[in-house]
Amino acid sequence: MVKKIVFIAMMIALVSAFAFANGGSDAAAAEPAGNESIQISWSSISTADTALSKSMQKFKFEVERLSGGRISADLYNGGQIFTQEGELSAAREGTLDMAYYAAGWVAEWVPYLGQINAVYTFTGYDHMRSVYSDPEIWGKIVSDVSEKVGVRPLAAFYLGTRELNLVESVGEVRHPDQMSGVKLRTPNSPNWIALGKALGGNPTPMSFGEVYMGLKTGVVEGQDNPLPTDRIQKFYEPTKYIVMTDHVVDTVWPSMNIARWNALSKGDQDIILEAIETARQYNDELQRSREADDRAYLESQGIIFIDDPDKKAFQEYAKWSYQNESQNVSGDWDWDFYDKIQSLQ
Image 1 (cartoon, one colour):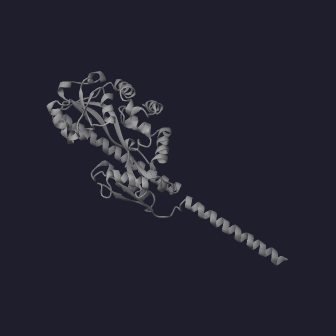
Image 2 (tube, rainbow, N blue to C red):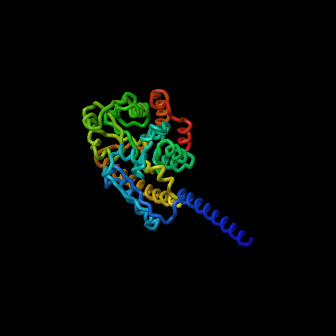
Image 3 (cartoon, one colour):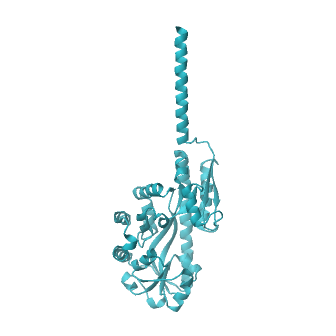
């Protein structure tokens, strides 16, 4: 009788151990062990000397430092392994872990995010940063993009701020009414034409390679780009004014394939987010310092900067224009989301 009881007890213990082992295996699959090696692949078309590529290197250094070398990154820039379209698709499919996405690129799946790149969604760098630091807004973006696009945005890296650049005959502009009739160069697409209207100008579609001569000959009277582009393309030669409208504050979002992200432990996710935040700060500081250098150079070439445009008037006009003149573009936008963004100025 005693032997029978001992045998039954042993069988119960064996079954319990087997069940526990299976449960432990499932938990391990959902929550990877903190000591496994992780290699992250990240591709970008940005060249090695750009802030975006340098920030990728910063991320690699930080994630290796924080994980004691257990997590590392394979970096590919300059389009080494993918075109821009290719890397965006590869990150969604999972053949690549990370790529730089942007609001305009995910708007196909999340339409309201198209307004992130609209005129005066952000009034400047500080406004943009306060929006992306808001847990409700950023949390909504992360959730919607993760679900509908298949990649998880990790942060928003500053790319540059677009300003109005005008020929001398237009004069000093501080209010959208002063842009009436001004032939403002835009790319030939609905979103860009809507942007030209939102600035109060007369959108004039023109390919980028023709802009310099267009400004020189008067075919167009203005264009908008970040200061580094104005310098590199020598737009300062046929123009006289740069109006610091700060009308589009561009960002890109380093994003990870959602299945790859979900397979990581919470601890490893936290390490990656901490490393990406350090890289984000590095990127933003570098981009902004370069803009300051470019301004000094443009001033030395005779450009007059208008630092006090009526941004509030431009912002109000832009909202009216999108809602009334460009409904083909703004029809799927979320105006409550827009108003929430504006409340954070």
